[in-house]
Length: 192
Image 1: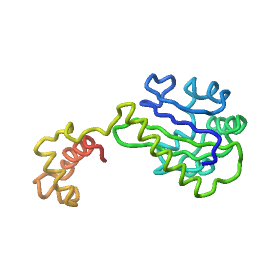
Image 2 (image 1 turned 90 degrees about the vertical axis):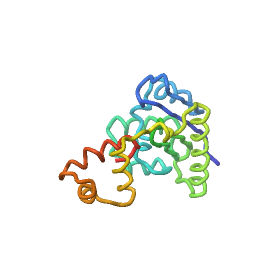
Image 3 (image 1 turned 60 degrees about the vertical axis):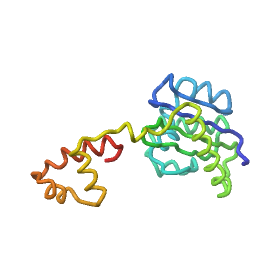
């Protein structure tokens, strides 16, 4: 694909020294020792942008997803100094699964042609899929989510496009009472 380096990180809690972090990379050793091994990825703007990005992004586009702190800007400058000058990061952000990313980096600062971005998107998505599979992380099975009869009725009406006001009328609820049924049901199915 024409990149010089790659890194794949998946962390259950995105916290420093998280024992449930999976990390594979061939980034320069000085970068790994300084930023990845001590858990510096917590402050890494790439991973923070991944929590908001719907698809892969060039590192030059990171400002589209977050307002960087001074610490994050200094980490990017340090990456540049270690030879990680331009790159493409593929986010992995699915409900009920740990967040992560797969990044491809280049020593050159030149813009990445579209075909390299597309190739990185495909390879990164497959890499994240496989690390999740081998780590045993799978999507939360719907069969384990159970609803009471009233919650199920609310969800059925919502699936048909009914508004909160419609729900209140249909279910003979007082105004505002509908949220007491809707919000917990939405939260338990991963929506809302």
